[in-house]
Image (tube, rainbow, N blue to C red; front, side, top):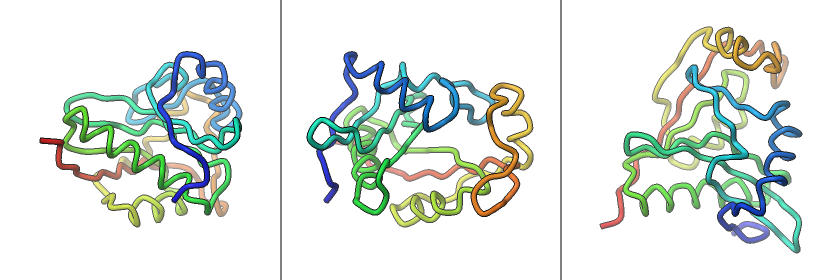
Amino acid sequence: MAEGSVRPIEEADRIVVARLVLELWGAHTSVAHGEVFFPASLPGFLVEKQGHVLGLLTYAVTNHQLEIVTIDALRRGRGVGTALVDAAVRQARTIGCSRVRLTTTNDNLDAIRFYQRRGFKLAALRPDAVREARKLKPEIPAVGDFGIPITDELDLERWVAPRQ
């Protein structure tokens, strides 16, 4: 069980979401598979406790697929990320999506482990895709977690049974 409660992002939250995205992602945009996203304008979920945001997830929906665009647990190891993923999976079922998908980079070993433990499977590898992504978002660093050069995009997905 997560510390805090999960709720949908509301219009009144947009300024807070924009600030968090800028702080956590280094820009107001996110780039995956050649597409530019503006997370502060997307639907999503917040985890809050006593008025403090502990986590944020934004998503986009296309072709019966819910794509997690950003996800951040501001305090790790407290169930916040799991609660956000669970909320995204429930939302996917509710709106009739058959899968939840996301893109991460080759250096993000903690995230890859996190998602696989929550039922996601590797679905695609785009070698050197981050070189192209940097043309759209130059703020993407050259080196990431554990000193690993950030070069490739990896897609993970989890199939979900839509609500009957």
